[in-house]
Image (cartoon, rainbow, N blue to C red; front, side):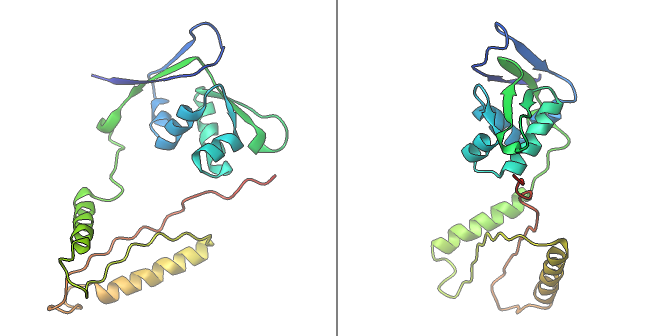
Length: 194
């Protein structure tokens, strides 16, 4: 049985206007950031207001608003040359859509659950002191703007290090077993130009 998700907005688009989406446009609404945008939209906000509320760059918000506008969920009022001032307004008082939940074929795990479990367990055990004072543990979240060439070079060098230390037979059999999980991915779009 299909689940339904509904967003209600304090807009005056007509008494009790309802937009029901039960077709391929549902895929656009399954994106978590787009749902967060809809939850914070209220009567309508500018790109800059939504960006500030959610702590996401203007350009990223604009891309998602354009996708929502393409599916007629919102209207994007493009006034002036500065996209940050463009206003996004809900297309109806209520928007209801069929929510595929976790049953969609497109749902993927960013990190396999078994890998995530092993790493989380190792960090809990490290905090409890199970491994002793010599245990090496590191969690890093680093961000930088890189060119495609720099990202490719970083990836190549990182893979060289992994190949040097992690293949079978290369480590020290008497040592502690370590795991490594890394993700190199674009996390944002370039900022909007005024």
